[in-house]
Length: 170
Image 1 (cartoon, helix red, strand yellow):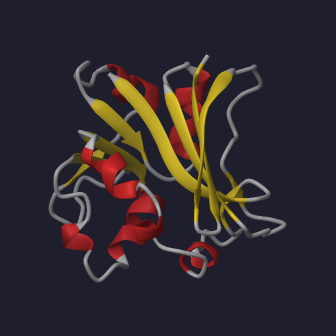
Image 2 (image 1 turned 45 degrees about the horizontal axis):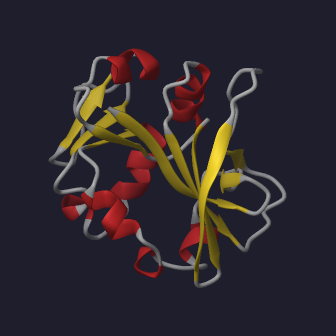
């Protein structure tokens, strides 16, 4: 099993503005300008929180998002309004540990899911796209407990105005 975080942040490290909006991202570029499709084609499972899921619901093509992966959403709700998304109500680290060892897992979205996985050393690769935007305030990507985590820089790519940094667990 390999656990990946793949996502875009601002130059000052935010995933979303303080109201959880992603307008800054949508106004900056699209996935067509990145290697997203190749990345997604190598994933078996997606894991996200309820806020990320709500962003997907806003899309006109929400029923077509992530069609080839098994998609889990951490929520207290027992059901979700979109087909192909499965609600989960337990700890992120506990859940990831029970998944099939032969699967590639993509952590989508924010620090609520990512932080406990980092705390438990369960993240193998972090692919960070950096957008040329400064928000000054917002929802940070990293909020794990204090504790040093080491990653090694594997690759740097440029996609339009985005920089992509690929880190693997050291």
